[in-house]
Image (cartoon, rainbow, N blue to C red; front, side):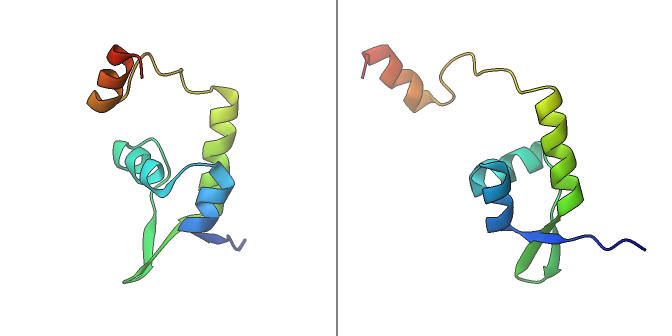
Length: 81
């Protein structure tokens, strides 16, 4: 049986270059591997799943954003700030 490494949140952030908020948002949408609770206060991700996600992103990168991603950004863009 092959053992797999479990990654804590900070390790996942460093590995993929995304913030915790973005990781949880993508996970909620089903666009990132799901974490599981190792203990009541310790969330972990399977390293192999995260690496597979990265490889899939390399093969087919995400589309660039088409405009402001929040109402506040839209207001700033409209004002020119």
